[in-house]
Image (cartoon, rainbow, N blue to C red; front, side):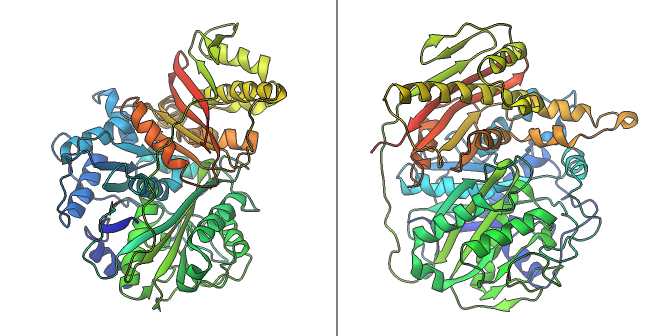
Length: 561
């Protein structure tokens, strides 16, 4: 069983969870034209890193364990980290990589184990909590410090504006007159532990799941396949009786037309239409990598006060399905809630939390898997190998990928719109699937692929796409922010592209590491297989610095039976 033992929210509404909750309970909002925190950099840290340090340090005040222990893991959830420094000539290139930023933060706070950055667009925070809880349940660590954070900057603001997603007024989640989202800046931290806290009724994670729509990289599916699958997986895992204690579905609720509608479809299809629903975006805006953690912490604190916080800005229901929403705070004496969140790349994440009053709800289930690839593809700018055999290829760098596409997958012209990271992943996956299909024709192996996961790693995030998008907004006289470029500035988009291409509805997650670490990658792969629905995954290293410097080393893993 995994318990929450400490938490923090740092935002314009306060620097503690209590300050934030009391502000929200009173109806105050952090929505500003420039909703940025006054954060002078601490030491040699950047503004983003300072925000993370402040939140984590405040959280750790309520703990006694040694963060330098090798039994403690630091997980950072962020979408863009230090991207506001991109293009500045006096910034060391390494600072732009989220993994390096996480390593700087970890060292500053005293962590010694290599940190993990979860970069799954809007679902990053909930994905990070699910990963951390699995690692603890499987006995890999005793404590996990999970922090979600992002800072507002012109790069991000211009991108969402180019997508026509921003509201000029305060957002109105699920309302008939909603017209877009607001963006916010915050950090939130949760410390998880396998040790029972002194609290008489501690918060515990019941279950979590991540599923992909396999529909589109930037538009939610109107059938809500991924969100419904994730909700149903979580509710099935916790058991039918848990629905009786469920007080709330805390939704993503961005205030955008199609995302709110998709969530309503998923909630009703999952049999939760009679459960109250709320959203916090009317108080904070969309805080990106912080959202999943912040909204989880705030819901816990509200439940401790036996309160369901109202949805600020809501007046009249504007989605299909009879969801139960209110702008007013409501009392509750129930003890559980579901957090749901969805985002670019088709990702959907759900986690179930419950106050545990007396006894143990679920025992830890340590497990050890021997994972060995059944097929492997390696692509460098000069060479390609499939299961150890070299393929004849033409060209170098970007030209090499184009030649491979024409030879092995010429039926998907969207390839030419993709950024380099997605092209690299696309070709590697095509070759992997080709190798698997050949073995199946030969009567060897084969897996059901609908729930296949994609667990990808790299060092440089989406740096090549970041630079391309920055070029479109750097010159005031030639200011043409491109939505098609902006969406590729999230590394997890490659997983969304592959899910759409191959109809994979399993877990899709992108992790950024300071450097390639096979042991940490194995831990994350093994933790993903803790989901009983996942029986195979495409995983490995997928990194692209530019058109002439990249590496794909992807392989197919199957769960041992």
